[in-house]
Amino acid sequence: MTIVWPIVGVLMIVVPFFLYDTPTDPWGAVIAGAIGGALFLIALFTTIIRTTPFPKRTKIFSTTLFVIVLAAAGVSWKTMYDMSHYQRKTLGTIRTIIGEGIQRSFTATVMLPSFREYYAKNQRTKLPIGKVFLALNKDRIHPGYFTFDDEYGASFLKVVSDTSITLVMVETVAKGRDVAFKNFNGQAGRLQGKAILTERGVRYEREN
Image 1: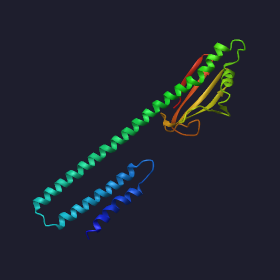
Image 2 (image 1 turned 90 degrees about the horizontal axis):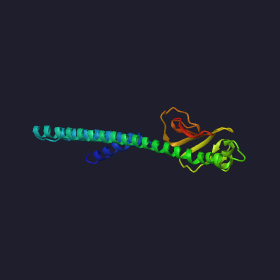
Image 3 (image 1 turned 180 degrees about the vertical axis):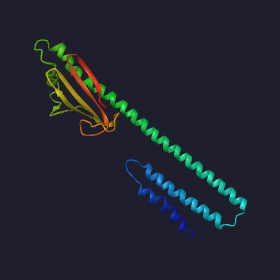
Image 4 (image 1 turned 90 degrees about the vertical axis):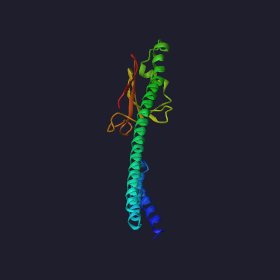
């Protein structure tokens, strides 16, 4: 009978853990395993108290202490759970702020050279600003797509005319304001902004 208890305890922890195991969120499996372990400890403690001829005072003291320890462990567990989710949410917010900063920097880096070229070096031929942009970035432009060195972002040509160029930028990791927002690249809920170049200047607009 002695060997049965360890086997039952392991099974009550391991089985729920693997039943609720998900790669994206380990908390489900951890909580399931912890509940199984807690139920095993309660069953083991109850069996010991009932089958062992301890004095009544000892049983009451032991039961009280066991309940206090179990409750303290539950409160501590809940605190860790809440803190981890708070940190996860905070990190997501920070990542979005960084992503928006990258998009704003991208806007300036990509658009300003064409804007300067249009006013500084283009006085003789006076090409439209849209054509100046296309000429300066011809190696980066593919059908509907604009390549740039950004591991976590994608940019697309949305508007191309002589007077205006609009690039849509999608952050493939950072989340936007609306989880149901349909991104330009087919994703949903990601940070998206657009860079706009006209004769009046360069600007960035956040879309999600």
